[in-house]
Amino acid sequence: MVKSKVIRKAVIPAAGKGTRLQPLTLAIPKEMLPLGKKPVLEIIVDELLSIGIQEILFVISKDKLSIPSYFENARGLKVNWTIQEHQRGLADAILCSEDFVGDDPFLVALGDSIITPNTIPHPTQKVLDCFAQTNAEAVIIVQSTPKEEVSRYGIVHPKSVGGKWFEIDLLVEKPEPENAPSEYAIAGRYAFDPCVFEYIRNTLPGARDEYQITDSIGLMIEDKKPVWCVPLTGKEIRRDIGTFSSYFEAFTQACLDDPEYGKDYRLLIDMLTRRLG
Ligand code: G1P
Image (tube, rainbow, N blue to C red):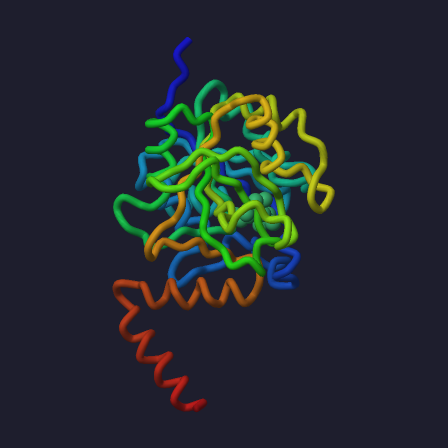
């Protein structure tokens, strides 16, 4: 059977507890916090629709049923959802999507990360292009990251650099700076052949004693499955809402970028800064 390289399905893991944003996240799921006029997840769903994704699955926890309700009521969108019973890591969350995915290749978009600018085509389109145009069985978006921050991310090691995308031969979840194999950090968007589920099932608990998708991808590489990375370039940037400071930054940027309110918001920030200064 010839494997399909066209991706039409996406999985959005959004089951995390949002511990670093508590107690706010006891009132509202982290992924539904607003960035300007829209919740984070709506920005991600719009990103996915803009690149031709037709079916979306949310992996949520029991207390986040407000997520599918919002999309059905506010947008009239039919979305699929499934419950991750225990928050045992990203690989475990992705494994919850196995029935939805079936035999099709699929995209994973982390529910707490957005990628800007919101251009057409969106930067995430490059993941689909790389998956379609190479022999990749997994593709990851990566972003250059300062050495002192690498321990927050999964870090990849390119076989060789140059060109718009590159194959990798190693990846490490949350390494200490001295052990990081490069400066390229995994940036929250992946494409997978459905064979990834077999590797997830063989994954042992890793960093933070959780099942890490980084380690599942490492098993694919050990098994000679080609894994490619697409670096973000120019003004393309990943923003997450994991901490209050990264959330405030993402919120401010979304307001500044708003086509209707951006200009006034900039004036407001200037005015407040002057008043304080
Ligand atoms: C996850 C991934 C990590 C990646 C990061 C940002 O980590 O495990 O490899 O670099 O998202 O996309 P987490 O934010 O869950 O700690």
